[in-house]
Length: 231
Image 1: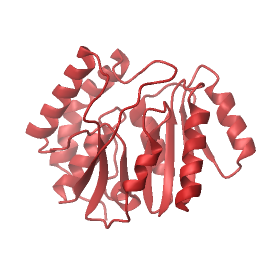
Image 2 (image 1 turned 90 degrees about the vertical axis):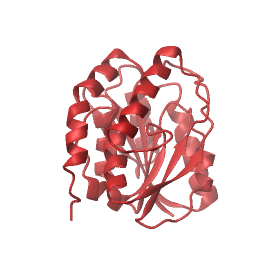
Image 3 (image 1 turned 45 degrees about the horizontal axis):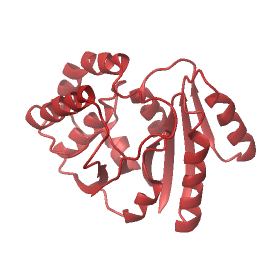
Image 4 (image 1 turned 60 degrees about the horizontal axis):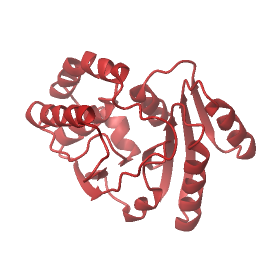
């Protein structure tokens, strides 16, 4: 398969190299043609230096650096817009996704995409509540019945071009998947193990992330109900 892999990260100095090396090993074993895009979302630790080092050692890497932390939505958008290969997969730089699970992905047509879901997470009660509310909104407002909208996916690049995502918050995956759903493009869902962090702190449930998502909730609904595929 011909992949654009995106590693998105914010303050992952102790995890990024390990994720990158595992991704390279996967590509070598699977003989996948690929490009790797690293999006550093305004890290304030040693992540920028690691990105610079990786780029020096591997000139083919594309490194995108945000001057300030803009959030997961813009990090994903930056990676998606830079992708040039047939299949596109964004992987968190925290090491909680086992890259070997991508062995389950097979070439697929534009009528479907792959969506990994976590049967179990180590979320606290607060994040479990946010996840439950997000799922309710997706199902009852957007008509999107997806087990885990905020975990790893593999799209075709044309999916991203047709849906032309515009949101800047963590709701961007809901936007993409809900638009695909309206076009009759359905997911192939695969269970995924959610591995504990080896280092660093989770950022997904932060107030800043939640605030950005709440601010875009109405916009998400409007984008989906008025969606017309880009030709």
